[in-house]
Every structure is written in structure tokens, then in C-alpha cells.
Length: 196
Image 1 (cartoon, rainbow, N blue to C red):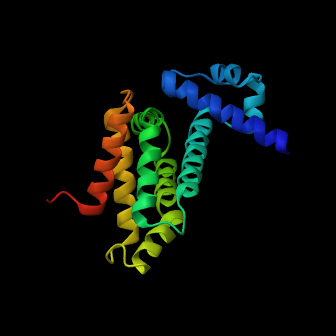
Image 2: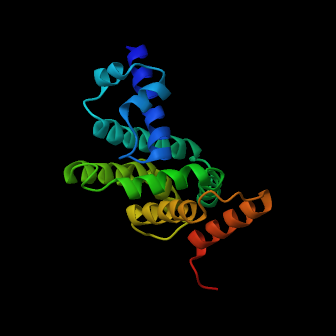
Image 3: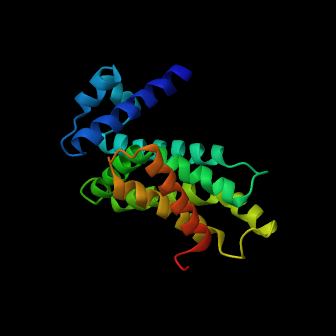
């Protein structure tokens, strides 16, 4: 059973690379199989189509992203400390997040996947970004660190800022000083908004 799960994840990891390099329409199942180190027929033991690989690849990425973000949050630390951890994570992974964001936005449309699948994927994204991190926001409200605000709106706003910055900066290479400044600016923007 573990071997089956490993092969499936190998295929999805290879798909992410190939789709990232070539886009959905240009990529082929043969290329994905070759990159994964499996035969083309093996792919169809796990997936019905290239479209299903594409959808499952996004679901796996969202799951891994959510797990990474959740692991950063520490219950005994302040809202600001947790926010700094989240900002640091996103800045350190700028290139990866930007590549994923471009791929997701450009490839998910009716020609690629059905409207129902696209809707399910976006709902999953919202769930991964929000529900599992609600306790982090709720704890901060209980401790009086932040005002009463809708947790869903706050987590979506924060993640939107982090992912938006990743998308905007794309493959730019930032030095450590630039990263620290960006982290500080992001944290201050979330904590204090845009006013002086």
C-alpha cells in the first residue's frame, strides 16, 4: 500500500515539474511518466487522464502547503510572532509560490478542467487556507492581541497578501537584507494597515 502511495506521489511531483515547465496543453503523459521513472501504462493505473493528474497535483500541493503553514504556528507564541513565521516562510519560498500561482491562474479554466472541478479546487484552496488555521486567529482574539474580526476574512487577507507578494516578485532573487525588509513591511501592513 505504501509503495502504491509513493508511486502516486512520484507521478504527481513529476507532473508538477512538467506542467510548470510546459503548461497543461503542451505537457504529455509520456513526459510525466519518464520524469517519474515509471512506464506510461503505470500512470493509468493511478489516474484516468492527464486532466485528473493535473487536478490531483493541485490538490496535493494545497495539502502540502497547508501542512507546512500549519506546522509553523505555535499556540504559545503571540499573534505577531506567528505572523512573522508565516511571512518568513512565504518570502523564503517566493519562487516556488510564484511559479505555482502563475500555473494555477493560467491553466485552470474550462478548457483545462470542468467548471465543477475548478469550483471544487477553489473551494479546497479556501478550506486549506482558512479553516485549519482558525484557531491561531481565535487564540489571538482571546488573548486580546487583535480586535474582534471575522477570522475567515483575516486569514484570507493575510494569505492573499503573502501569495500576492510571491506572485508579484516572481523569480527575483532577494538578498537577506531585502528579505528582512519585506518581512517587516508585510508584518506591519497586516498589524497596522496602511495608515500612519
